[in-house]
Amino acid sequence: MGKSILVTGGAGFIGQHLCRKLLISGHDVRILDSLQPQIHGSKPKLSDFTCEGRVEFIQGDVRDRAALERAVTEVDMVVHLAAETGTGQSMYQIAQYFSVNVQGTALLLDVLQNESCARDIQSIVMASSRAIYGEGAYRCAMHGLVYPEQRTVERLSSGRFEPVCPACGDPLELLPTPESAPFKPMSIYGLTKQVQEQAILMYARNRRINGFGLRYQNVYGPGQSLKNPYTGILAVFSNLARQNLPIEIYEDGQESRDFVYIDDVVEATLRCIDFSGNYIGALNVGSGKATTVMQVAEKIRAFFRSDSSIAVSGAYRAGDIRHNIADMSLTNEVLEFVPGEPFEKGLHHFLRWVCAQNHEDGANYIRSVEELQAKGLMGNQQVGA
Image 1 (cartoon, rainbow, N blue to C red):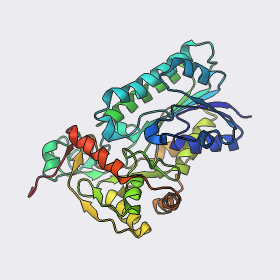
Image 2 (cartoon, rainbow, N blue to C red):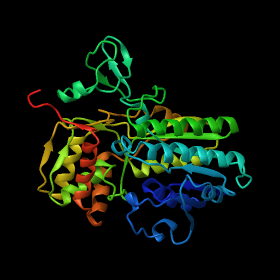
Image 3 (tube, rainbow, N blue to C red):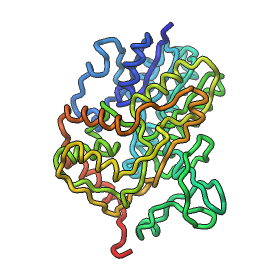
């Protein structure tokens, strides 16, 4: 029997894919989304989000109590995706990120707890982030499992980009990061996602319902916003490569990310929605494999047969981490989920979709970099260091 499901932020990248799958599964779907211009442009088409009228769409902000009351009325489950995203921008739009991510989540929970329009929901699923880990898990030859501190400006400016052991300063071996890792966010974005996750899981425990904090890694795939220059290096590099514009790579290009394809993300989320047991906690959603930023740039340039140059600048951004790989063992145990889309195949799907889209002005990306520089949030490797 289908459920009535509210998806906040449902007009976003993950939300659109998820809502289509929910409809196929026989659920009634309602979206609450503010249609932020940075993501959707100045004139978004509502038909893109309503699936030909099969989805009830409420345009509203998660900080608007009246909109939330309307959105939660007679729903069985909530999937909370609405959030400000992006590490770099969060480091100077601090109040905005706390307002949307923290206060918006607090207001949602307040409405669910206190308003008569909200019947007792069965489960709440939220988009958390691997950003709450910071650098994540590593192994030191002397001290074993460690979780490094944020890299210092002194090390970054001298071109020493790899994290070191917090106890002895020795080099480290990268490990997959499990959900048991301590919270060590290194950006405002990561900190707000930590608070979001903890608040929602606390609410679930108090109400004795299922609560899932899905720690998404670097999600990519068709439908990803090409308009937002602050998130998604695949989208940024694709825009630049299609216009034969230079691709600048920060640090030394060997920083790596766990890229997870949108279909795998949706599948893991659906398994939480359909979960028949009892669970309250966090789960990683990634591929369990790392790909370097240099590899990404080279693959994208080759696909488009682009004349773009690839320049390793040595620049670095405040709040960035060096590597990440998700430990997927707990997610497999709880959800019986194994990611199925290899990066090579998923990237090909994404780039074929990009070919059918209008390219975005490369100046948008340049302006985003200039903003970080103006705020003192970017540094450069010292010449000769």
